Length: 518
Image (cartoon, rainbow, N blue to C red):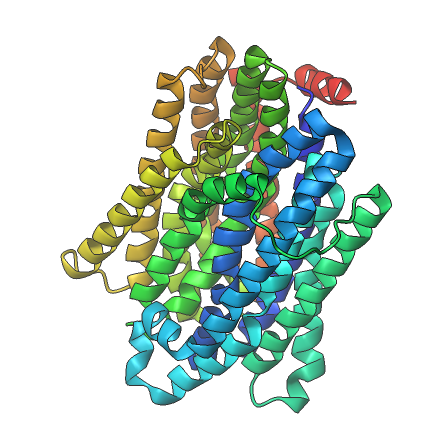
């Protein structure tokens, strides 16, 4: 499995970023809790990141990387650099213009994204102010997306995977360094977002300089290559960022209940660890690999890459989902229950986390299936399924809240998001299979059910242990940390033993994979 080393490089760097992200969010939770400033900060932070996921990282990368890889294959580095420069001029103009428009009409955007804030003028004004400070982050992320996509296509994965770590570091520094000089903690964090964007752009620029592929900025021109890029990117705006779109829908609905937006944010941060380490690593590496295989006419190689990627994805995702769904309260308590984040906040966040845990395999599989379309320059089909998924998400959210009378909007929204993501996953997988672009081989068909059983055994063991020990012994932060660490070790041991007994993998096979990767 020649792509496992690349997965490991991206996954390791993403893991470091996510761990630091937990440190960041733990500090922020202690400073903000789930009150009004926390809700305003969550919306302000989501604004540029939502558009980054939709326009910069998602739609742009899904269309830019295959085209850049083609130019690299057919025209060499000079042709690829020219295409990158043409794309950069148009992208920079479009994103800058969009940012200016959003800054001007920010109150209207907040009305749309956070309709529940309309009844509280002070909350609304704070959200608008923080959003205006943070939103230019999008411009830097667009530049990072293009240059990071170039590095990935060139086979340099480490620096683009490391760059998000800078966001976590800079935000924590800003929280403490700027707090004495600004009105609220939210203001300090918003200014920190901009500083982080500059830092991320700088390190990606440095990486391209080392590779000798820094694109120059030219006057925007609608060349044939740029028109093709735009045609592919337009439908990808929704399809590649479907998880973010669904979370946005949930955020809009959640603003009708105080603190729900913050609860969703913290639950989202927990499941983003496995999603980032596994799903993003697979999607980042898989797209250029599939593209290269298809460009060289190696259809069998592309199918094998798809199968082994999904096998690798599920082997790591299923136990993560089982852990999140069975021990959510210990996880949330250790990560966030400090300062202004209290016991009730932990309980509400844990409820939402269970729902996200049930949807985690779908979130990750979407990341692993969409490259099968994008590598073949088909961004329309995922768009159709994404649109249907959004409709399902809205309908399910409203049904759960108003028909089933869920007291927690965050829980209802989490369940709806999971349902919508599973439907999207099934549509993507069946369509690829029907077109002959995804053929589960014997190894994948026999191992996945065994992985499910192994993850279920692990989850049952974690639930039994946590039920027995958490209530009587989880007193004080040090004891809570010790218990969670013990649960993690137990889970790893149970899953490892179950996997070996059920023959989902073997130590010899894993070692051979890494040797072939080298």
